[in-house]
Amino acid sequence: VIKNSKSKLAQAVKAVQASHRLVLSGTPVQNNVLELWSLFDFLMPGFLGSSQAFFQQYGRSLQQGGSQKSSSKQHEAGMLALDALHKKVMPFMLRRTKEKVLKELPPKIIQDIFCEMSPLQTWLYQAFERSQACTQAQHTIASASSAPASSGLEAAPKHVFQALQYMRKLCSHPALALDLVTNPGSALASLAEYREEAGLRLPGAR
Image (cartoon, rainbow, N blue to C red; front, side, top):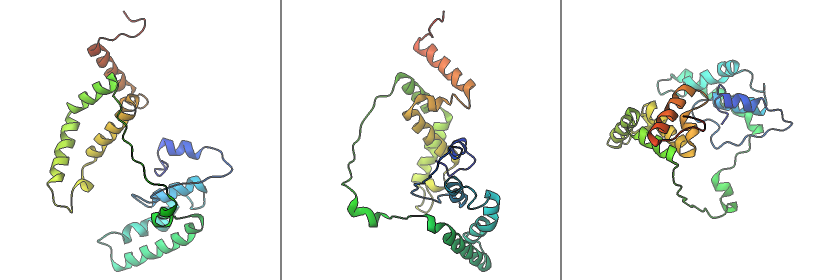
C-alpha cells in the first residue's frame, strides 16, 4: 500500500501520528529498491535518509549491478551495496518463511462466493466489453498465450494491467471504476448516459 512513496495514499498514511509503527509485507522489494525505502520512511522516518540520498548510496549501485549488461566492477559495487543495506535494515526485520510457520497454520479453506452485479456494474461491464481498451487487452493476452514460454504476460504492455485493474475496481464497487475523485467530468457523463439508457431520473428532476 505504501511502497509508492509518491502516491497520495502513502503520503496520507505517513502523516498519521503514532507512538509505535509496524510494517507487514510479503515482498518488501518487488519492482525497485526505493520500495524498501518507502516502507522504512513510514516505519522509521529519516533512518535511510531522503529518497535521493538512499538512491545515491544504494539504489544506483544495486540497479546497475543487477543488470545483465553490468560490468564486473558494477556487479561488485552492487553486491557491496546490497551487503551494506542488509546490515543496516536486517536488525529491524523479522523474516518468517512458509517452511517455518507451516506447522502453525490451520488447514487452508477456499470458498467461492458468487455475487450478482448491480445494474450499474453490469452496464459498466458491458460498456467495457465493447471498448477498444478491452479489444486491445484481449488481443495482447491471446498473442502472449501463443508466444514462447520465455515471454508472455511479463512483458505485456501497460494497458493490459490497466484493463485488469479496471475490472477489479468495477467488481469491488462501481464508484471506484467511475473515478469520481480524479476524473469527475467523465464519471458524471457516464452516469448520465447510464440513467438515460436505464430510464432513471434523479430525485426532483423533470
